[in-house]
Length: 238
Image (cartoon, rainbow, N blue to C red; front, side, top):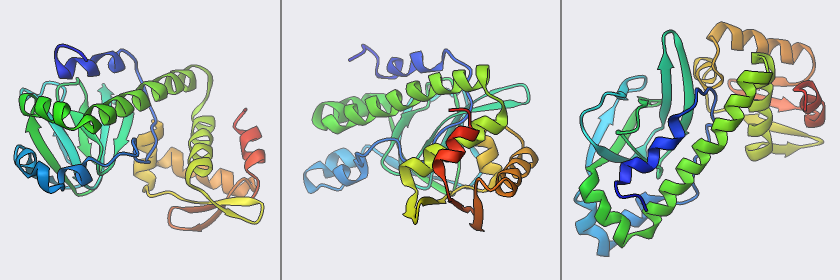
């Protein structure tokens, strides 16, 4: 464990990045742990804060050194440089993160956070090992995607990056149907554009191109059927 809890976050931000998964980062839900009766005193160190969709919750120059758990909604962690934004992670209920990490944090939906100062959370890390394990999983997820992002920026255009994202989502959360996969993306076109580092118009055009090419079928809002995942994989240049 690092001498300062928030210093554990620093190595993940030495890169320029785009794109990230929408799925929950860890399989551990700290909210369930904090509901345990024997931890009621510990739960009291967290205060709830609510934010409307789209609002920037914390900025890189944030003066408060805080740790938060997503209680409701989702937050986007990203870097911004001039007119470009690079999404690092989309965190869901039960995930935790810190403000002192040099990133922007945005409410991806209407969001509620459980917020506490770092010193109070140090006790949580001693009494609830899941805090440490969840932190490590979140950071590992971000670091893993950092290499994927760097590779995508270096070797792939936006069309391939978008196909990569859809393929990954389909493999992880798609529902088998006949010989294909039914994918429900819980993202608007604008949010998807933020995830893959492109404009809304570009992503909309590319999705339509994929449908016209027979790589996907649009079933409804954010719902796509991929009849042949292997064909989509070949088209993505795998």
